[in-house]
Amino acid sequence: MRQVFLDTETTGLEVAKGDRIVEIGCIEMVNRRPSGRTLHHYVNPGRPSHPDALKVHGLADEFLAEKPPFEQVADEIAAFIAGAELVIHNAEFDVAFLDAEFERLGRSRVAELAGAVTDSLALARELYPGKGNSLDALCKRLEVDNSAREVHGALLDAGLLAEVYLRMTRGQKSLVIDAAGEAAGEAGLPMVDLSTFVLPVVEPSAEELAAHDAVLADLDKASGGKTLYRALEPA
Image (tube, rainbow, N blue to C red; front, side):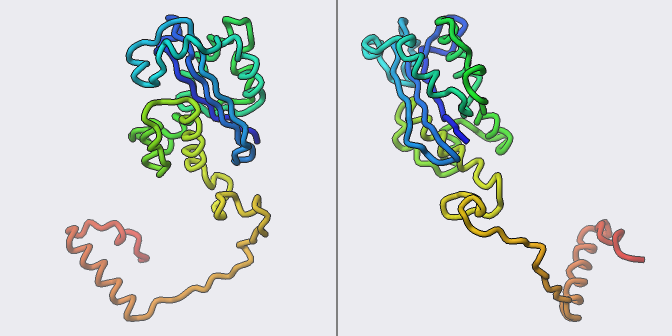
């Protein structure tokens, strides 16, 4: 299974109003392990960044003016993501910007290039409903070190996302995880048929039954006789 963790930085939030990509970072994993392949480009957007965006990514217009335009790195980006499952935090945002860049060049959209797109933000909201699910919040919750993240950087954020995603999905194939985080069967260890085990049944002693009845009596008294367990007692 080939996955590409992807992040972009942009001149602003309004792709429909002409905001452009200024940085893209990608990290490849194969079978949930880093392959060592990465892709990183700063991009000349041909327009200034919004002041609020500049505060986020810290990439000055003068710095970006010396970088290649998207058309010069489009082939490399398309080849890197081709056929892979893209994992992107708030995927709708990044995909919209990539699609706009590819469409300006008359090229295929992301959905036609990638094998699939997984939105890690949607996954986080399912796992942690009602909680903050920004990348920083997830790093803190899942104990991923993000101390180097003074400003947003596409390659750095792609790496943090990969760590967060692996921790959010760890054990999705098996409840038995080895030290490397892989399912036991995938690590080459023998699978155990749990149906072959016969578990002993230990009956309570008379003293334990009496103590249990005393606790239930106290609960019944405290609730004014409204405990539901009485309705389940055999006649």
